[in-house]
Length: 220
Image (cartoon, rainbow, N blue to C red; front, side, top):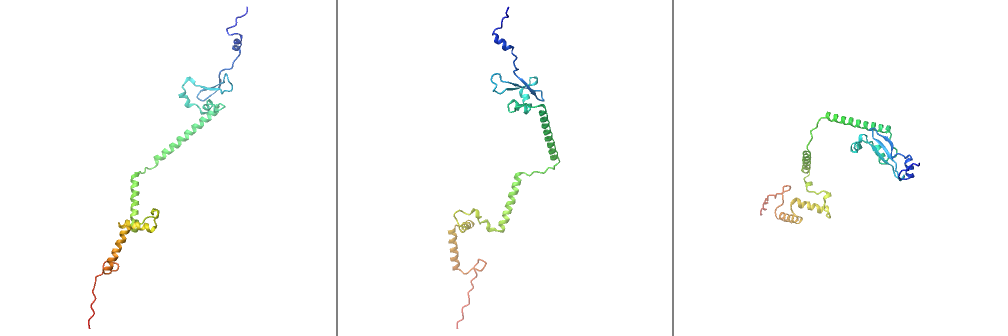
């Protein structure tokens, strides 16, 4: 008597009897015990294979992801074609440890140097600015005491635009005496007129000489 075929027909029975590849392949592991797998595509072989990681004791990604080696992270993201080897991971771990030790040693040396260096009293910034301003003011005062006219002479770089140096000097004279050019000219004319009407000035004094009448000639 023939054996009854299961539901689905003979083709389903043959398909189930054919050995199939596993849905994932073990690729490697890291120094923390995490295992990495690659899942080949089942429909379109032109697609990239899926890559996963299995943590020990089912720990969460937030706890393991930060400690995962950079080499395996690159492999999971398909930026690295070949998976890293244990020797590569060990060498990278030694490099990281040496870098951390060197950084700690340099920091300790700087800390010891700061402890040995004598403390220097710090000067407040406003105090430094005040001392600088006082020094500049004293320097300017000494300079203009020696050369008083320079206090009224404008520098060349601030000469008024469109005016000749002579016109600029006239403007300085106006500021120095408090008069305009016309007023100064009028005062000079009045002084000259008054000087001509009176006796001559004593040389070098600015005062008029005393008038001494001369003796009249004797009549014969």
